[in-house]
Image (cartoon, rainbow, N blue to C red; front, side, top):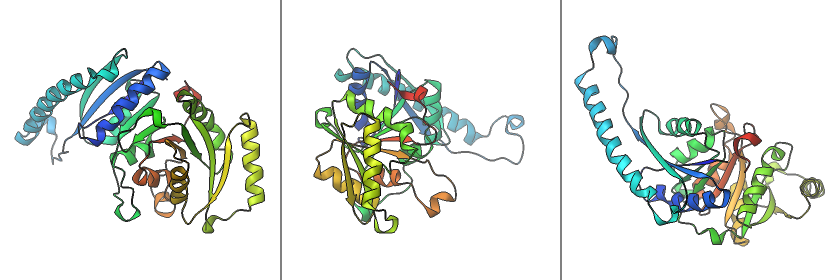
Length: 292
């Protein structure tokens, strides 16, 4: 991992990830790239816009975009000079976009980022879920790992990390990365499987599954089966009981109709958690994308 991408819109929640990204960069010897994307409206024409020479509204939006970018670059420069970035290579850029999350992912590809760190508002309450945040969309579509920081976090609080999974074959694709991430922060790694009534499985079978998984990676991890009504609640309840500093989880990056029938647990965790979350795409992550 050579570059950490940190998107920000300069709001307080979006700044939560800056200090964490700096500490991660220091521990992994990576650089940090700060990025701002401003949303602009799209326009539709009955003719060819190029032949029309641009409408007044289009020209006004272009001027607004250029003016905003100049201001944003100045603010990014100020952020890059923060004390916690001392000794770390920090670059920055700004783009106008029709779609914020796509622009963030395009920038990640452009700078060859190994991970994205972004702040977000975590509601912490099942009754106040806010759908469709940019953080959720980045999590859903990103091929590289994403760390979502829902509140100001001190890295010293990361003594325990919970890896929640079903521990089937897909988990093997991302666990080496999770293991190395935990090692960076000297975190004790807990392996957690949540069993719910609608997805029941026998304790005997689950214990064997987790024991085999643990043994495959050295056998030094704490393994726990946890019963709850919902997977999201089980993960968050266990993490709270263990005073965990971070939750790690895989995502299938579900899109289209599949999301209406079976929403990804990772997105629920992003909405609800008051802890940092590390999310890795189970199907698209490869070692070349981000192993330290």
